[in-house]
Length: 238
Image (tube, rainbow, N blue to C red; front, side, top):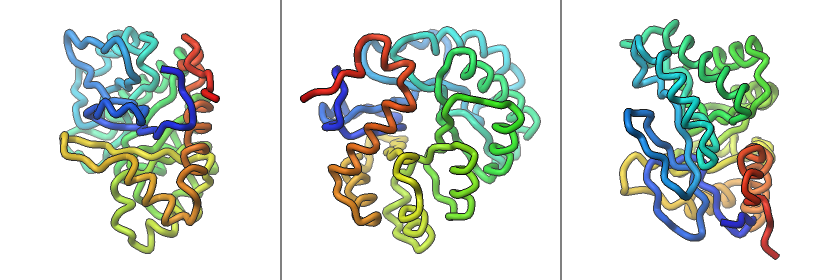
């Protein structure tokens, strides 16, 4: 595939639609005998919901998958303080090990965060990470948005933008467009179409959908340039 701003970008999905108008980053579960498909873009990481005492031992296996040219992101990974069955210390330990891999391999991170934004900021500062970090499924307020943007995070919005609450509208109107991604995060094959999410965001932001597509394409190229340059996929169509 030769990438261009004619495509919609779905930053994070769990089931590919094979839509030729959409560039998807499909999330794969790190599991024994996982085979990365020969085409498409993928992310792989250790999700905080599935962390065990042995998760740090899986880091070497994760490293091998991240070296695949079609795996362009590490994730989703992060911190979920709502999961009481998995200690905060263990979640943070596994997350930090994945940050180290991200930095070594120059791979961006797609982050799952629940009730943990302030800790993410602390860890990013302490780790001195240089790779882009993208918060997926953001639904917090503009105060937290500004704190994350100030620390260099990118923000991805999903189906929550259809709620059209005052909080969500305020965030969409204030977020810098050069920090934005959109996603479906489809956990089942019944899903919202990424084109509908683009349309809703453009409507709430009061911008043209073509301008939004162009900007998100630029963000995609900027964040994932290290992986996309491997086989000439950075070329633009005329």
